[in-house]
Length: 310
Image (cartoon, rainbow, N blue to C red; front, top):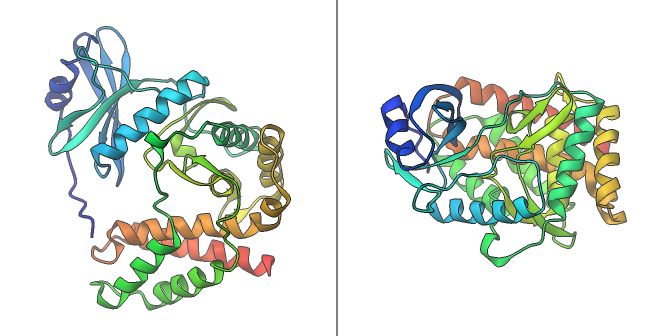
């Protein structure tokens, strides 16, 4: 069971880390996001703006794998924010019992959901899928049937009981097992293609960020997650946006016929994976009404998708 203690990163904390870099003096900082996995800050130094990221869940080993992946992406000119080396050639520092890194800061904003941004994320997912796979950054996807079964085994002893949610999750897990295949093309996936993990300027993608969920897994999972992130409005799938995401993806990496056949089920699987993520991140043991509301929204989404897929 993972514990989530709220962390307050101070300007003094940031200064203590930044002094290891050739970045000048810290002038100010602004909290950009505070989530389960990361704290992100825009930090202005006397030389430049940087992104300061505190990793609250990742192990050092997984962060090192992410850095190896970034090296490959940089060679392929993939649009992302790259980590900066300190004076001694290191990327990773410890802070308050966690690990932190400093990245290039890219100006922009989260996107509107429209035809252009749907196409941009489809292209980005396909470009990542073509990244060469190397052993030193292979990582297992946290969203798997095995992990779903593991969380199901905890339901009966959970501190907080949600019978409808738990019953639904168990039934849907076994339903999808018949459609999710290990025989589809595999490679590197981002794992979390959502607007808050991207930086856009207008409708043009500047960077995909937050690679902590990256993994070696079925490539179709990433396209399905991108559809969940960029093609739903008011929790309803927008067919026009989905078609544009798939079209743009297919221009760069051609989907196989088996992939096309099971894509509707992978869209469900990606949403189911998000629901798993909320359960895994302490919904069973801590009361969080925002999480409960999001889980119910995801349940409703998948139920509608499944109804129209059968």
